[in-house]
Length: 519
Image (cartoon, rainbow, N blue to C red; front, side, top):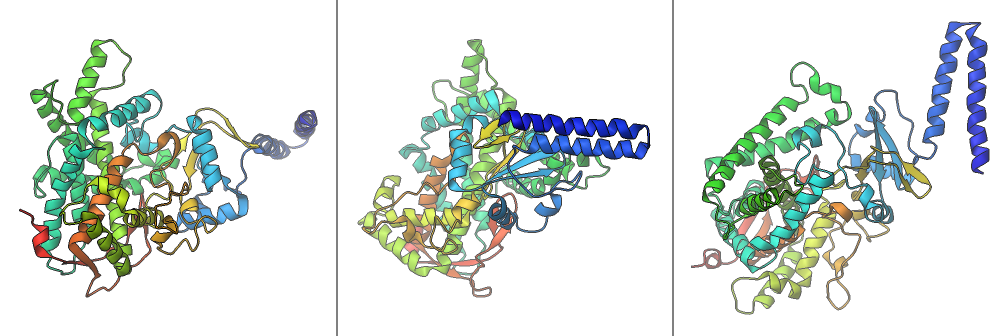
């Protein structure tokens, strides 16, 4: 069969070349036409083994298709027409959209070692500088991911020591909610501030006052860049746009913000260098500098440096703040729509406390409904519907298709989280879908809020701990009620870098004031 196909290919090329030779003597235009046909035929023969996809326009590819509204709906339509692997293009960049539970596992788990790279584009190379964890690939990524995962236990992220830091941050957070006195209040900023402060305790060994000028500056800059990176996205696919006069696509502003954040972080690193005690590491910065010193002294091949440390702390801020805070925002939206769910959580909290005043992460095992609410909020909130883009440095065969090297691969996680074949009535908020008939928790591989495979989120243990304590603490101390002025918040959101709720306010009415300010 291969011989027949090869003969067909060769015959096709021979025919075209014969036509070219014939037309050269007759007319120059005919030569151009024949050459164009030859190029198109060659392209057709070369791409026959790629996954299917819609026809594209010259130069811009499928820009018209990806710029017409909610990308989740576009990908849903493409999947229905072409299947779980869909080929697209933007500019000169080939794109592969991977959908469906089985295909996501096929690509990112079974063949994960081939798709663990980040694509080389403006966001990863210039904004992320190809460093640390989120935007790095190869040895740099592996070394820093290993450092982060292995050292988390050293500062107690998965144990009781770190839990004390989370609980410490909860007190000013709960007091801030109490200070609203049940009036309309937008919890977005205070959730971002609290989760950012937890990252500070990991990175710098201290929490900041909410009014600290450096702390406020870095939060404002990070939030600004989250918006600006969305504006610069088009430059990822059409790099020449970065060099147009002015700053039409906010590239310069975005990079200036990166510099500002790094200058602030550098001052904190410099302070640590003056007070570092090798026998008493306090936080990520201390642990990193000690690890780096040991590798340099041993003449080991290491990518660790102060520049890498700057990006690592930046990765922690962006990855550990925005995602957790947004998940909590969606959870509050779902809970205000379902007061009966709030009361079931509260009942489970009171039963588990059994006279105590504060839950421990160890109590989570006895609270299946609360865990189910968290999981359902992650599924329906679906804050990262396409995770982060991946790439491959060599051709990879998936089934009968060959994925060319350098393809930008998009994991369509949304296709799993809202798949009606995996979830009954997927657009409904139903925590009980994660519970068995006897009320015990049922885990489902179709839930992947931290992604899967080689690039699974290294901070998921921290995120789970934060979600547990914030959700239970809010429900333990407050009734979450709709705004008197606006009513219930909308259940659809805005898709940018993440999928966020639309602006809204809620009311936090204290259940018992004395519980919010423990002595």
